Length: 105
Image (cartoon, rainbow, N blue to C red; front, side, top):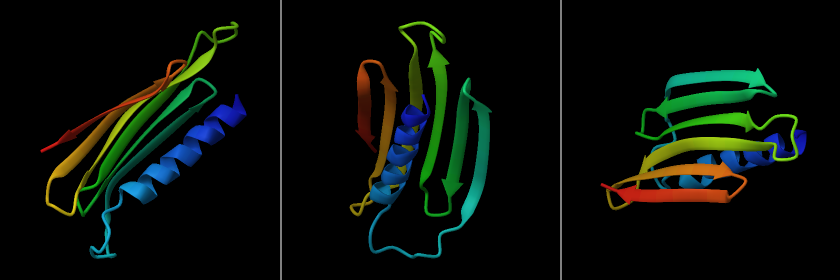
């Protein structure tokens, strides 16, 4: 179970680093940050940055104590692409894999 949570933590950091627009001001401020780690039962967090980036995610243990036990993660993040369009990625990750949906506005 711990290895699953570590995996999702690594994915989170990778998404933050990869989603960051390149060549923009590096003086980005954190406007909002919330983190609630419920322990084995789940977690949720969100953040908003001054450059328009934001992310929110929840994770919960489904079917705890059974052979079908799985972590279900739901979330989204958004950022402004170099062409000025806002990219929003909404996703779910569960026993069926990582399932993202991308929209551009």
